[in-house]
Image 1: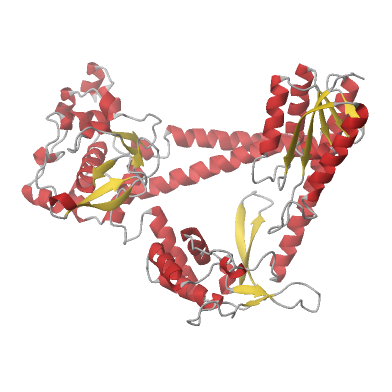
Image 2 (image 1 turned 135 degrees about the vertical axis):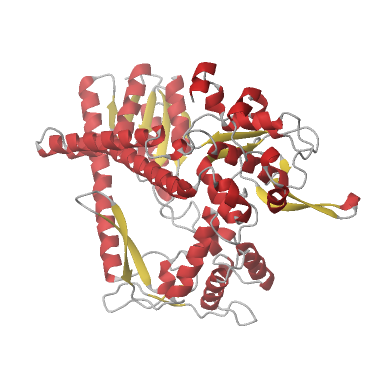
Length: 566
C-alpha cells in the first residue's frame, strides 16, 4: 500500500425530509458516512485532501438536479490532485453504468484508485475493472427495480383514485380509510378575518382566471388581502407567485380527477388517462377547463386579449430575454405616453408602432418571394432531419431489442444503450410536432395576406409572425429614431440569424419586387388601416433595400444569371 495516499472522501444521500435540518435522521446519513470514512483514513494513515457531500441528491438517471460536490470531485480527478477516492459504498458515487465506466476510465488514465465497501479498486487492473463494472450494473439495476415498483404503486393508486403525496392548496389530509390508506378532504380552515378559507380561495382564483382576469391582478389582490400561501399558514411570510396561481388552473385534483400517463406497448406513444378520484371536487369541470384554455391561449399568443403582437416573442439582443409591451410616460414632455417593447432589464426598447410596422413589411416581403411558403412546407430540411433522427432511433432500438431477446446482452446493457435512442426519438417527435403546428398556422399565409392584414387582430398577427419568423432580435442602437438596421431576424426553416448591420443592401432586388409590396405601393386608405400615416418614420433612405435584402436573403446570394432565370 502506498505510504502517502492523498484521498478525497465523498458522501451522498438521496432524500432529506422537507422542513428538517441537516441534523435530522435522513441527513445524518451523510454525517455517518463521513465519520466512518474519516476513521478509515486515520487507521490507514491517508491524508484527506477534501471532504465532499451531496445532500438530497440522486445519482440515478431519474435525478432532478446536479450534484455540485460530485462535480468538484470530477475536477479533482481530471487535474490529478488526488491518488484515492473513498466512499461508503459504490452506489454513493454513481448509479448510472455509463457514467460509472466513464469515471473509472478517467481514474485509470491518471492513476487514481477507489476505495468503497472495505476494498480498494484499481481501474487500471483488468480484474478490478471487471469487478467495478459489475458493481455499477448492480447499482443501476437496483435503481431500476425500485423505480419500477414505485411506478407500479403510483399506477395502482391512480387507477383506484387514491391520493398520493402532499394535498394541493385548498385540501388537507383526512383520517385514514378502512384500509389504513391516506385520504384528502376539503380544507375549510379560516385563514383571514374576512372569512377566507383555502377552498374558497381556490374557487375564487380559478373562476377569476376563467373570466379573463390577469394573473398579476389576482396575485396583487391576494397579497393585499393578506391571504396566506401554503408556507404562510405555517407561520412563514407567504407571498403569492404567478406560477402558483397558474398551477391551480392546471390541477385536475380540484375537479376530483387523477391523471396518469400510459404508454402504448405497440407504438410506444404516451397518452394521458383521467380517473375519477375518491376525494370531493372543489370546482366544476367547465370552470377549470375554461381557465386552462384561456391560459394556454395567452401562452401561445392566440388569445384575443393580446394587445401587442410581438410581446414574449421578440428577443433582447443583450440579455436574450423576451420583450413585453409597456407604456413609457415622458414626464418632462407633459406626460406624453409612448408604447414600447422592452426587456425586463430595459437593455433595449423600441416603439411598438414602428417595430410592428417593420416586422409587417418583412413578413409581407417574405410572403411575396417567388417560392413563398417553401420554408415551412413539409419537405423542408428541418422536417427531413427530424424524420431521419426518429427513424434512426427506432431502428437502433429494434436492433438492441432483438439482441436482448436473443440473450446477447443483459438488461443493464439494454437499458443503457436504448436510453439514448429513446431520448433521441422523443426529441425528434417533439420537433416534428412543433413543425407541424407551424405549418398549420402558416397554411393560410400567402402573398395575398397584404390585402387582409389591416383587418387582423394583434393575436392573429402574432400567429403569422410566429409562423414565418424563428427569431426577431432587437439590437442596441444609438439615438431615439427607429433604425431597421438594428433589428436581426431568423426565418423559419433556416439556421442563420440575419443581423441588420451586416446586411448588404441590393437595389437590384427591387426589379424582382412585385407590385403592392412596401409603402410605395400601398394606398392612403391601406396606410390608414395599418396605422402607418408617415411611411418613412425618419428611417434611412435605403431602408426598403435593407428590408428586401433581409426578406430575400437567399435570392440576393444567387448569381445574376440564376436570378434572371427565376
